[in-house]
Image (cartoon, rainbow, N blue to C red; front, top):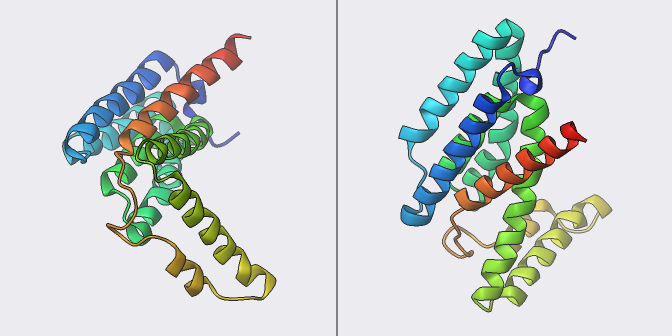
Length: 192
């Protein structure tokens, strides 16, 4: 196959150790200051690209670049349209740079699931679970209406909370949790 993935990384302990360590530091930083600094994310991205090029050549670098874009894109969209954090997008791009497309997609899925679970727990703790579930179901209905010929995407956007209206949670914690879950799950799959 012309596209080598870091799934076959010669030192997976370096690969996974780096992403777990960086996401743990980001989670602590995000919990403390509600920010994930460029001092962490930029070296993570550049180091991932460099490691991919060194260990897997040009094909590894292409895989790393693709994974950076794939993992960062949903979080860039959240930043632009829903008030998400730019640091979250840069951190996910850095994880993609180290993991490649195959492992990166597993991490992206796990991060999304962990983020949903943590959001529900946070909403329940603040006694806002009903309001949050109402917003989510309203937004889903609003997004599906244009598919069936009723309403428009502009209507769906009005149902979503604007920046500052929604519940703010440090998503770095969800990123670390999802990365840890994915690492453990992939390790189990490979050892069984």
